[in-house]
Length: 226
Image (cartoon, rainbow, N blue to C red; front, side, top):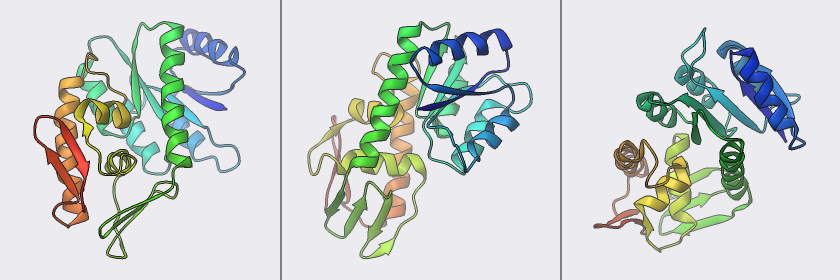
């Protein structure tokens, strides 16, 4: 696995690179947002994961996340300083798959990486799910409604995929926050994550355009209808 480590502080970057290489991972580094976006765009040897510090000197880390997400579905873990709750929430809304807060332990970082890569692998291996007029190809990340393609944003698709994998079973809000945003109920930012979930459900329903495809189960969560 190749990890792109984006960190402007050389000492921190070198220490994290050593930790990642100790896991037998290949590590590429970038000290600026511009270099990070360029590294993701490398068609010959793109990264499998981006570890992105949101406090970069040239570009706002959230903007870097947006630019990366605009051209790639590579998993992104945002790194933020303690107390920067708004940056974490903005990072997740901009397409980051998870976040880790400085200072963090090696075990926590590796656990976050493992969880994000497991979710990414599950997305790639899954099959096609059909519910009424809706067809979701989880591997190709494509959506059809009555045979017509529907274009979704990354997190909207991830949310639909999390529901599709459960068939008609209910997914709790906590499960969806974990599956789509990597947020546990006691994580800092979980409350904002719940509001973000509601916004994404509304956007997903609007894009699908067919009532009843995403059903609210009062007090619990959501399920796929149709």
